[in-house]
Length: 269
Image 1 (spheres, one colour):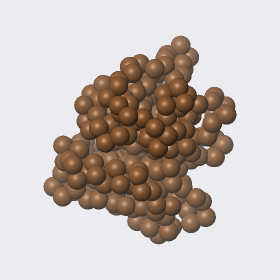
Image 2 (cartoon, helix red, strand yellow; image 1 turned 45 degrees about the horizontal axis):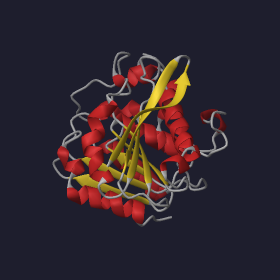
Image 3 (cartoon, rainbow, N blue to C red; image 1 turned 120 degrees about the horizontal axis):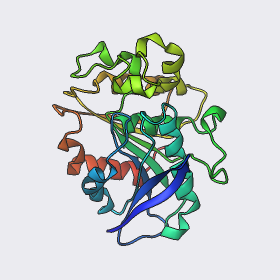
Image 4 (tube, rainbow, N blue to C red; image 1 turned 90 degrees about the horizontal axis):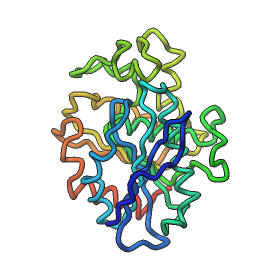
């Protein structure tokens, strides 16, 4: 594995943002790239903490670009999603430099990163969520892998959780500008993943994993997403990881890695 550290992909008002690039030893035109977003409760991430587990996918011949985004304390929604889209376009433009195919790109994220990659992958072509930077490339991806991501922040406290998800100083409150989640529907509605899924609109295939004992992001968040995808006739797979808690090692088991590998190498349209 080759690790290329701190590739600056964009500078936001004097703040550089970086990609950690992990490349398998044998790269060819068929090597897929996952643009990965690390969970962080929407705050600034510790991107290096995911390198060991991401290397498990790299060992299967998959390249990984782990993206740093602006934390919600610096910039509220949709900053995190816009940064992720910029990273996708940057990697497409620079794919040849690293021996990669710009047409073989996927998104993957865990927890808040799952929400971010769903937003990024489902809003391609929606003008209010597109920027001019790197506009010679599209942010469109071939598929999205969501690990226990929130999908409707207004319903996070409808099930038991160890954290309050409503108050201004909650992760979700920070996401919308440090405001009460239930008092600002005009700000929360654009963050709801299901609002970008319809029978008429084409979206990439989606692979979902969620632990049945998740104490932080309720299991029902992924159920709502999957139900909406199937209702609209979209390509989706949902794996309930029995007994798993939030971010447990079960999500990096050989069985899960094989499911991810198959999703990428044998894509369904």
